[in-house]
Image 1 (cartoon, helix red, strand yellow):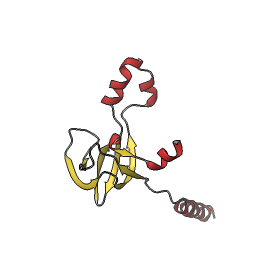
Image 2 (cartoon, rainbow, N blue to C red; image 1 turned 30 degrees about the vertical axis):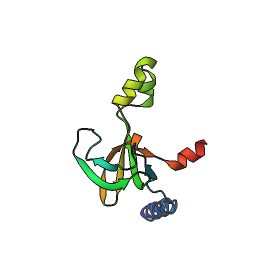
Image 3 (tube, rainbow, N blue to C red; image 1 turned 90 degrees about the vertical axis):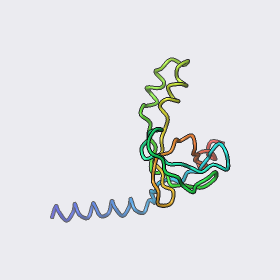
Image 4 (tube, rainbow, N blue to C red; image 1 turned 120 degrees about the vertical axis):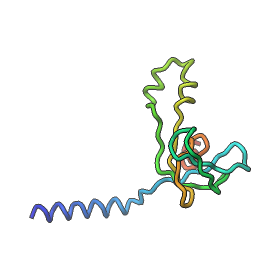
Length: 120
């Protein structure tokens, strides 16, 4: 009897989570020059192998999550005069999908229009 209840509970949680429409968010490519193409890195490291994509300025791509090696709390603990350099040397990387290609890109080359609209 307990197994049946557990199975029903797991199935109902899966259905509710599936109905929520929780998907990776769309981000917009925001390169410094409109003629540039987005390049993906194999790893969240500027020195890692790169892959070329067909995505350029204004294209929508799938975001699968962003990371940073350090927390905001660690950044805030650094003296103000050194904080900008520390943030620059520990950038935010986003794992993205462009068509069938997946890789990492610096967050500074992406924007989330939904969040930008809410802040206005």
